[in-house]
Length: 72
Image (cartoon, rainbow, N blue to C red):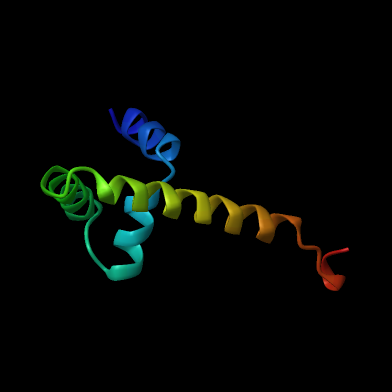
């Protein structure tokens, strides 16, 4: 059951787990807040979620592409 949870979190960009780690909250509470806010505000946090997912991917690719002098 753990590997299913891990695979789903990995495929869903890991935005909630990243935010939870940065703010010191549990991932579950961050996910619940996204769901409740999406329900009450008619989906606007979903746009924020996708922007954060895009930003995290850009950040990851930019860090991978950098080569440092001492790495060569």
